[in-house]
Image 1 (cartoon, rainbow, N blue to C red):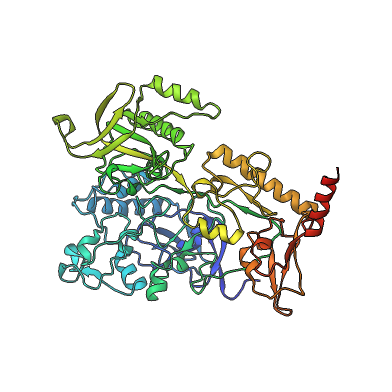
Image 2: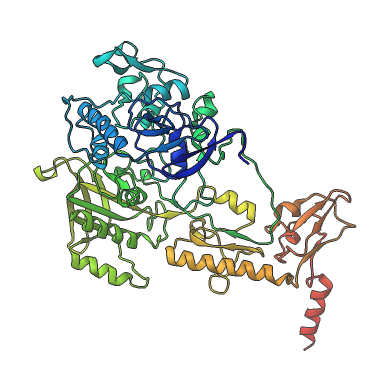
Length: 592
């Protein structure tokens, strides 16, 4: 039984049901049948401009060619998408488009896929196929109409009113996004400058849309909407993502909620922040082009990054020489005295990538080379044999002031070479700053929330460095990864697995062993000042509102004695440390 809101039709011998009001193109796409088109977008009304989506409709009296993007799906309709007549007609349409825009790469590629190598029609030198996608998205979705069709016949074009930059244009960039030939130049349309949304994951090196996947391995693996930049949430217009989402998963009325969940164990794995290299002004980060931090270079060298894995300078050129400066912000009394552990190895990795992808001269400025991991020393020696230059000495500054002709137009790294006992000036095209690993900016808030202690450098302190390296002082709380201290990926994975195992062991046990020595508060003498509540480092003391006294939660108490020392009335006591017990112990010792 077919739903009254559904229609059934046959396409290339396959039967499909689609909602009433759908087009033949949408029905074909549901079956996975590919029909070429340049003017169709699911979020816009069909227009039928490019005429590439032609299909053959079969009737009892014969057949006819129609554009599938505008022809409605009808009950019992028979459609053929790959007949000789369809291929021949599509070929003619493709020739017309190729004649109009012979220099557009996307048109040439589609023509090649359709078997059209050249056109029989007179060629023009246009880059717009007049599909109208930009016009429709501006009017239908943005509600602005800053651009439209102008003139008629062979002079027809798309332009803002009076061929002047439009004051109506919001510079949202929707016209650029939908254009199949990428010929829209926003600067010719809008009075406002384009303001791309910087991608946080790509360190601001490229833009992102308002609805986006935070990163490839995000959990949950679902896109999010940036409410600060989404036009639908700010102006009520657009809504393109809702129109194209077949699952109906877009809900603009959702709001952020805070949920409280009772748990038995907690694993703290808040990670680290990369040292802000702008704090060391002499290195020129943020001031000089082609001075990058480690994460920026990591994204540039990655295949999914802004350059597709090509290592390029800000000018789009392949660098011929690259300097890598180690220990930026670490092993430095002015910033962080500790060693970040991973800087040497990821600097060596960067050197290998630069050498492999560009063949450039690579200079590593290091204080001491620390390669303690498995296979690390071998990798270091491999790079030495590959021709990477290692200069032992702290870099003094990075400047663009040239003192010789060979330094013109270059970045100059000035540093001491302690092995040769000289100061060197090395001209390079790119500088990579290997920054320190430092605690997250909210480390103090997290420490207060979970009653964690901090060690040197404000990393979270474990219960014991050898016997309990993943446990916090409070039972049921475990540490994993760089929040406990700088570490590389193998160590972080191992510590994460250990923390998970400890958490599972505690939950599986079903019970906890209490400390033999805990504190207690005499309820008859407690004045309810709550001094002990504020001073307890384990949040093991609660205030009884009914009786107006403080109460020790024995399951949380570690017997540290802080409350005993801070109680102004002296009513907080520690089990096993009463005055009478201590006197008895002394008398027993003295009696011997």
